[in-house]
Amino acid sequence: MKESGPRMSKGRILIVEDNMDNYELVRFILERAGYDVFLAVNGRDGVAAARLQKPDLILMDLTMPEMDGWLAAEKLKANEITKSIPLYALSAHTLPSDRKRALEAGCDGYVSKPIHMAGFLDVINLAFHPKEKKKTRKPREII
Image (cartoon, rainbow, N blue to C red; front, side, top):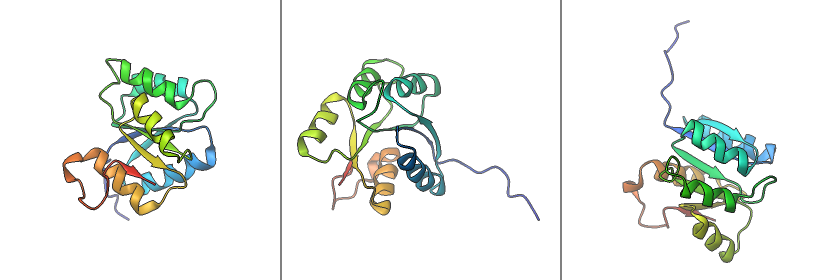
């Protein structure tokens, strides 16, 4: 059998998530779509991983131990190394005030859990290609 050579990645995504079931689902979806993913299990580790690894996109849970996602977002957007990395909240907090708080903390977009696979991948693809906005839906948010 012939090897097909190295797989080309669509991009590198840091997932900051303390729930391993949630992480495994998101990892599975993103890897099947061609993205490379890596994990940080809390906001503190997420900030450190982003500074070290410089991912193309960060997906951040909001409620975590050590440092929550809101504070981690503020730290990432205040740092010269990480401030330009797109950062999307990935959370079960679905109230409009939660979305507003995430955006005020520095998140560039918001994805609600539970994840809807097709819409989720649309949002991720738009994060990598923001000029390809769809006119029928807010491009950086899925509920």
